[in-house]
Image (cartoon, rainbow, N blue to C red; front, side, top):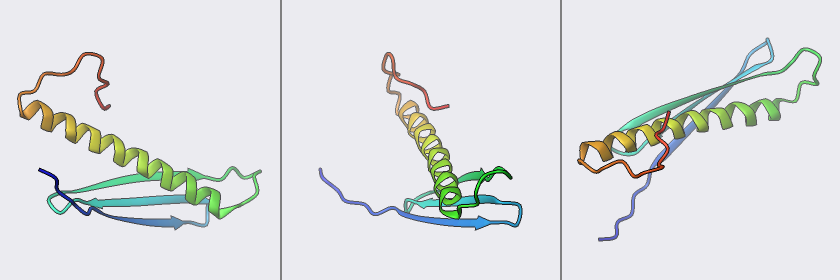
Length: 92
């Protein structure tokens, strides 16, 4: 029973005057929408390289979203009455 889906992801990056970059990531699965957030701060003594802030903030937003997606999958597995496999990490 193969199937194909397309999930859409939108990533918005914002940099403020205080050398902080924020990422807002939205995953739309067609049936649900999850939002991840990430932030990066440039230390005052470091060179201001916006690309690094973008990468850090986006990576952190992706991590946030991944944790949420794993939690959702765990809840769905539990809802199906499936036992928790031994040694499986519960998303936290």
